[in-house]
Image (cartoon, rainbow over all chains, first blue to last red; front, side):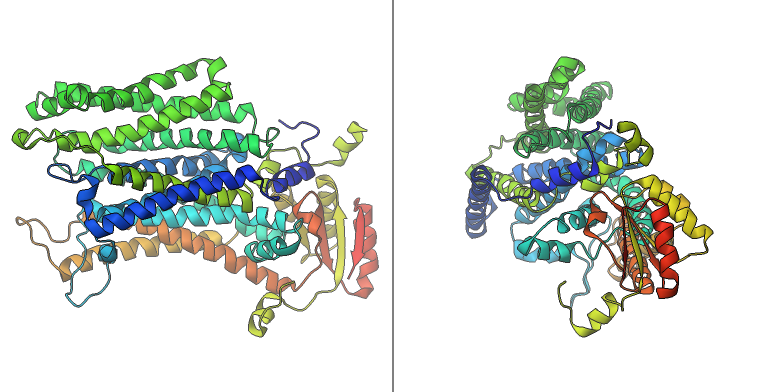
Length: 445
Length: 182
């Protein structure tokens, strides 16, 4: 692992360099993100003025693109915690170079996801009705509803992943602080919370970090399980399945790892991090994609098989509608992108080729978005209990506007983060290098 | 240094402790200094390192951080709050459905679980902050060096002018690149 030129000093300086003055390309990207966000905000103003009918909401499809996007973004968030917490507990050394990007992505993806239930409720100014607060009518939320579980799960997830990100950042900000000048010095002095790297600080920090990882690990598995129960607790065929929790968790990690690849390939190039984020890291990410993608593919097979094997006419009708009904194109996009395309990663030549990996990761993102669209919209549109009420739903400009806005919101935060805080962990990359020893120094001479 | 208002200044900027600071370029030199200092009866010295190393922890022989108690207590409190929140609120505003129990525990396990994690994580953070702050206050304002977050290790030994000479010699003997008195 340790090449002679990868010294502690080299790592600090290489990563600190990424925080220099931004280039014109950076501002162009940031401008594009803000422009997309503006599209979202304008669409939201229209939605507030004219109501959710603008988004094509109509019987029988009242959960559509907004909830699809919600599940999509929560899913994106999951791989960050997988890489930062679960692989930390497994002591995988390769995570150190990629985990910061993944963790930042987690926080911003949850921030994006959290917007969608608020947009979806239509009257955003009543969002606080979800919170159990004492009120004059003596009402409390219904804790038997999976939607309330979801609120608690997402709220906890956002809080814990944010403190986890900040925790990891503190020693790195201190390292940057000690090199910075001017206003940056002041910013990093304040945000490093007096970190000096003393043995007392490390003693409490490393223990605390371990426990945070141990708490975040069951949390990440619970969050997408709870999201899946938003559907599985209902009796709609296509939703009401016991396989949903593991199926959603695997799918979430799968889409998240794909997003990490999508983000890391350009970042590595733009910030010249080729020495720190190597092909080895991408190959491991690709293998993770292959593993979770295979679980997702297995879940697809299982769903269809059980629908047929159950002998339940409604289940069978729902899955027939899914594969051969008016939404056949969405279902097959999902199956091809998620179950078949990643099989290419079995070939070493493809999984070590960054361009191929980047393209596959984008197709996985598209496929995973369609997976949620198929589960949510198609199950409602072709609901077999009321075949006379089936109706095809089509997303409108308002759906696409809000979705574009969500991408703008996510990328805006992400771009601001990578330019102001280290996108690769300085401390943890050093941890996997051999420490400087006198014996080694003598041998080198 | 950013100026702080007086009460904060008193908490976060304790008075300076006189002593000797050694800057080390190598991990094994630092470990040797730690062993020699402990053999010489020094206890309250501080080791700086850019990354956590188990060798340093082992050489210092410190007890396990009390942060774990914060995590445990936070988690238990969170679980209890989750149980209280769901059960008390259910009976305070009963939703009677088809003769089913008003407070039914299985769905509430989800809330209890999430609250366990939330409280456990937040109290872990508080545990780290409190313990690190108390340690810093006990040690006083001590010398440091900006290179300790990059690639150098450091050992600071609190010592009055009578002992400073012998500590300096000890640090140099262990291979310190630089020794400063302050």
